[in-house]
Image (cartoon, rainbow, N blue to C red; front, side):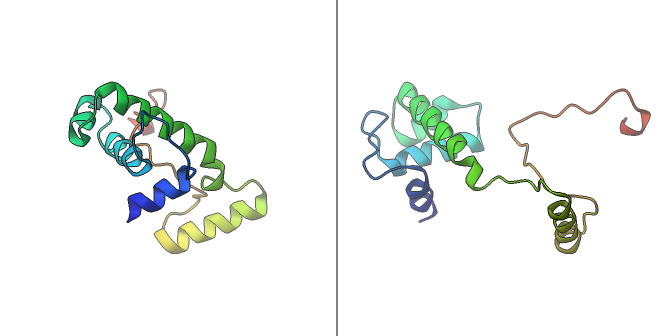
Length: 119
């Protein structure tokens, strides 16, 4: 049900890219990939497709996600919005001075080495 919802959000009804792979299957391939990004071959095997077809689906869904990111990824831009965001983050999660967050599970973040307090 959730996969179908996401597919409806990302694809047009007539979308037939990726060699006739259904919208639902494209979304399943993409979701499997973002959970375990290093194994395109495993993704392809899981859904019974060639690796090249799985890669096309992954690239296509990723491009659609980027195109639509402005609909769901927003950071406050005014001082008033930032203050409101700080209050909400503090109230809901107990995190002071926070205005937003990114889940960087796909991006390795190096800790700064210039300041001793980060060691």
